[in-house]
Image (cartoon, rainbow, N blue to C red; front, side, top):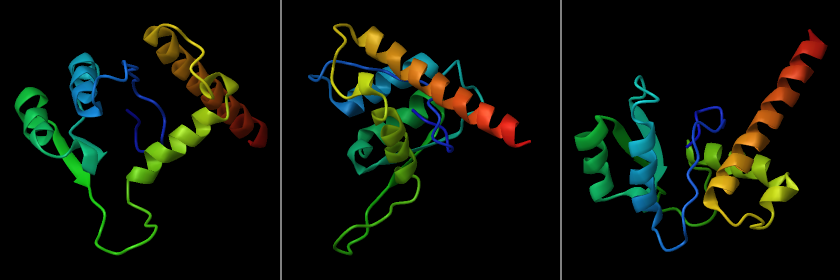
Length: 130
C-alpha cells in the first residue's frame, strides 16, 4: 500500500496461491490500527465486488475502485499510476529484479530498505539544493 506520493506505507508479500483480494484483507487487518486517520483507499478493478463492502464493515474505510473507460487503447488512470510509479522505483534495485529471497518476510524487508534508500537520496538532494 502506498500513499498519494507513491511512498510505501506497508507491504505484504504472500504466496502466489493467495489472490490479491484476499491478500488485501490480510494487509488491512495488519494496518487498521497503524493508520487511524485513513479514510479512503483507491484500488483498481481487480479489487471490486465484496471487498468494497468488507472494507466498510471491518475498518470503516471507503474503497474507491478506479475503473477504465470504454475507450480502446492506453489510458492514464487517475490514482492507478501512483502504484505503477512505485513499482518502477522499486525495479531500479537489482534485489527486486528476481525473487532472491526464500521467505516472504525477507522480501518485505527489502521493499522497506529500498524505500528508505530512495527517501534518503531525495532528502539529501533537497538539502543540497537549499
